[in-house]
Image (cartoon, rainbow, N blue to C red; front, top):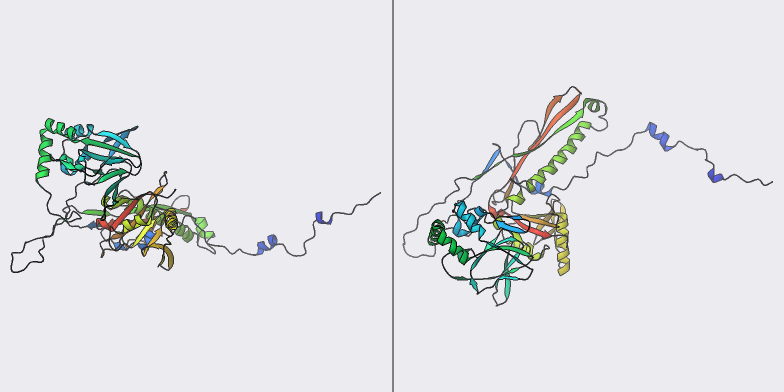
Length: 466
């Protein structure tokens, strides 16, 4: 008979000391404050100069400008058929102020849809200009002769822009530049022959075009502002011209927006579970964090005052090839003085880094509020995940000048409000209901204003997925 020895490894050994599970019954844990993954750096809130709006409304007074409309044309489509909205044709210079919808509708019906492949020429410099071209979709390079005879891209046109509008005038013209499709493009074209037929049919249209052509616009500077007549370089005692600075008669007013929520805390929690951390304070801290995140999101994306929607259309430019290149950033910088910072999605900043690596360029860094961040030409590149990325993998880069003294972008808020907890944010006690739940109304009041159009620029449709 064989006797097997017991498997000592399978026998549970008796504990020689107090276990940690038992010891914890007489001990407390060292714990962190409640953490929140949704908290970001919120660079926009930190970098904007904040104006105290004591009356709840901020009025931006500007010099009078003669710009009419937004300068871009809007289209509709049914399936693959694209049509220009008739009233939008009043954006064409010689049709501004024309309000006969029936005539504009007849004019819209005469536009012909055409499609171009990448690299295909739409119009060639030197040839007869016999059509107005509206860009419904895609990008088009405007190409002209450089200083030494070689072709150079002067600008990039995209959705809603147009060229050849002067052919509406009763004169013969030739194309000054060549227009070439960068991406697949859909255009709507109106030939001079079709326009002539409509002129013969509608006397009011013919008279309006002739009147706008014969009467030039009032004197204005390159920004469209009413000119200030100043004499210089003269000698002797000539009679000096009189002048005055005209103002907009209906300046824009920004009302403070609000982000609010009701924080609820049960009295039992507030009474019995306040050690070692105050439960109400922690609930409030996390609520304010979420409220500030929403505040920055609204400052960027709100259709009324958000920066992406309030950038002047003349300050919106497009990339030359898709990804954000150093050339595109230089073009964006050249549109304004004293650019304070770029604001972009972190993935967009990474895409710019890839383009720099491709060229063998190493972007510099700079220090902002004791933190090292990427920079281009000395201008910091600040991240914000509130800038949206489209389904097609494109995003935007904002460049802005800030501060009222520099006629830039400013944040708006009112301080000194009742029950103020932070500047522009208050926490108001709303009472205790029948379920013994305490309610606090947490409100943040804010907005943003672009003081002059060139304070804010946007590089649009930046490809980051390539």
